[in-house]
Length: 86
Ligand SMILES: [Zn+2]
Image 1 (tube, rainbow, N blue to C red):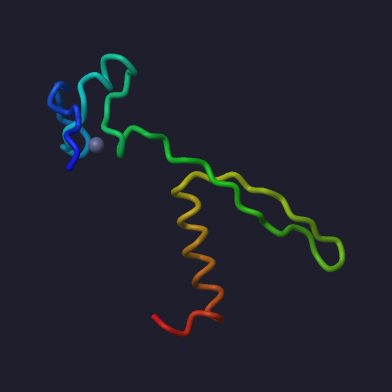
Image 2: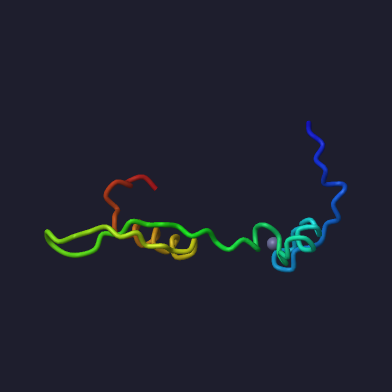
């Protein structure tokens, strides 16, 4: 069992989700929300095939986590090939 140093940290409530997070985080780093809420969604690079016929190339689309999830949903819908179990 490890004792974390949390006891030294003053905790404040995240106005977004209600979880506690270290006040230090706000005072020192200027985050108004807890880690879960304050992080900008990480950007993801998704290779996307462009073009037609023998003139195709792959571009890396940069999307936010949200966009990426939508993209994955669409992908799942359109490719039911492999996934028979679910
Ligand atoms: Zn939060």
